[in-house]
Image (cartoon, rainbow, N blue to C red; front, side):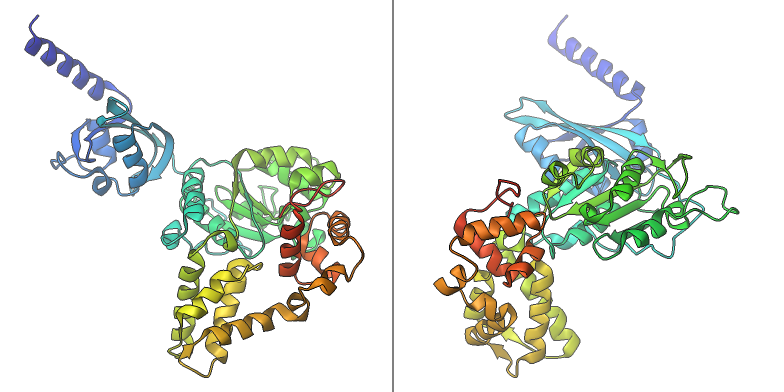
Length: 450
């Protein structure tokens, strides 16, 4: 058999494979342009009646991640179980390079159609909020934060519980909304509960009080309205043991109301957050191990603002623009003023930076804010305890300040906020001293994580 005949035979075999496969299949070249597509993919991508040869795949399928595609066609990586949705359907997407992995000729993209969760009859509850945030809002993020966003985009599509770990004041609540909005559950309910702001009784009432007899589901109204949706629990470590048990069941797809033994199926994705070391809390008997292992397989750490370099400036500019427009004050900062913002630790993260930018716009009498004004405002914000950074401040509580901090952290279960309050210093001062003395992880005999 000559070479031309052999190539024709292979071509016919491959076409038969493409047309007979239960997946949608798209072939693209090394530039991402469509070279071939089977009928199933044409139907799913709503392009049955037009020629798409030479069309850039991300124009045909906009929710396909361009960065992931480039990883395949430029670097020879494989992508498995990425999820994306267009106006027709939701898909599981696998991508494999064609040719040599070191120098691919293109990629083959497999699409598997998935069901979209139906909106429940309950609608939104009185506790629901609008998840009006999207990952695209963080385009100017730093390298560290962009890596976090990329991981969250992927995990958003997996439909598993997620544990977000990070300090107070970071963008965790906004990121939880982004996860919901870019998941297959985005058309269903979303609600958030800040566990450190409510008592155990209040949380239990919101989520697990017994439903009125007239409700056939047997679920609390707020939980019933979240069927097929997402529940975000901020500071989940603050929950009581009883509530931790009920949340652990909920993560596993089971709902148990207060004062009941009857278990009902539940379809709610749980996203939880914490600023503490949950393993350490388990050792202290303060956190349920089964809940931790239900949440921890998909754990994503959100970096604090101080680790994000010049992104501090980008975020500050955004906040300043917001308040300049709101208060109609054309305020601008000098280069030295921006340098001051970059040098500060921002223990309250973006929440603190937001409040500070608002303060600057409201209080400055000038159009141009210089370094001296910013330094003065930062000193005001830190307070007298933070300004007292000399030897007297370090020895005020005893001969061994490092041991004092370790013991206080141990007494307060690793909470830096409560530890700083007990020691009579600001959280920023506590963080700087922990850095100075190398206190990183522990409580009972170990150091607390920064």
